[in-house]
Image 1 (cartoon, rainbow, N blue to C red):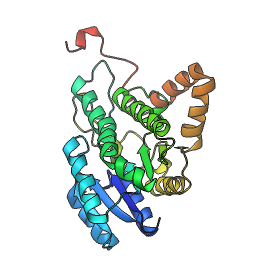
Image 2: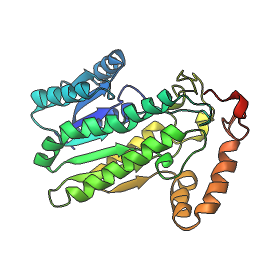
Image 3: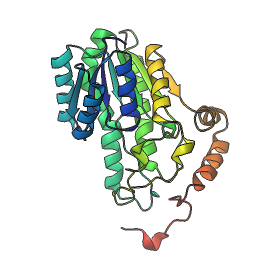
Image 4: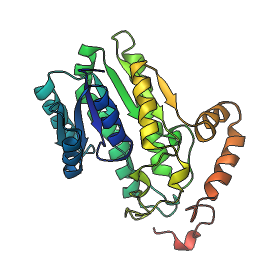
Length: 277
């Protein structure tokens, strides 16, 4: 990876920040994108390398993504790896959630991936580079209370799987990464039914894979040009396996597992009288 140009969205925290540190350690040039430019500048200063460009970017805005890629190419002249990592989550039962919340999830998670990919693709084809999408186990199995999140991640998986086939003969490497529950800030910023941030996590972060371990796996998968990466055994690989061969059993196991979350946002709905029409 030495001398490669790696673009990472959502690089201000969590998996994105850990990826920036790992690729920097390997000698890559970095283009770090996020809305929180102050966090990016702190990271840039900490890494202390001239081969880092921070770009304030809201991936849900197409022009921001176009500008991100323009600045990357103006600075480094090429793109070798495009990692679509930016994302948001939600926790709310579908019957209560405002439809604008679902739109926001799709705007950031799906359209953010589409926009970044659209403008990076010509440069990736030139370098026979790597296009990476960070989805989730929620992109393989529907997670109750997270309809918008699962839908957006399923959409990203379908989008990237299609691009892999479409550019099969042009040297494009496409990697779809499905981490299990990983310790990061995404749960703290998960949206509730009204689109407000929860500001707290419903899970014990200490029992999750660290963002650094996740980044290490992704780094190695990019180097080996793998097509997919499913992380953790119980919540990851076993889930995908059961989804292929025992889907009805997986439905029940998923329901029971997710119901154990403190304040699980599904199961006993408000009833028709309380649904906003």
